[in-house]
Image (tube, rainbow, N blue to C red):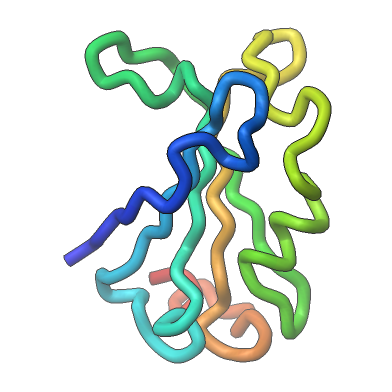
Length: 116
């Protein structure tokens, strides 16, 4: 069973208040993922169930030995500037999901632990 925990209602107090969730559980919750849940950050237009919008989903995968937190820092820093601008010409609105491999590195198998 999957679990989503809202960690930040306004990630780093950035413009538009992108929300940050930790997502865990399910068949892929093995190995290093037990201590490193997936992290999902969404721009505001993707957060209102009463007014649904079409939002892009970006999957960010870490390098060898990395994790979701490392990729957030490398890709977004502290979210300064226009990181979550919702203008369609800039690619918004969107959610970005940061994943951890099951082991130290990715297994590079189409049916391995990392695709669950």
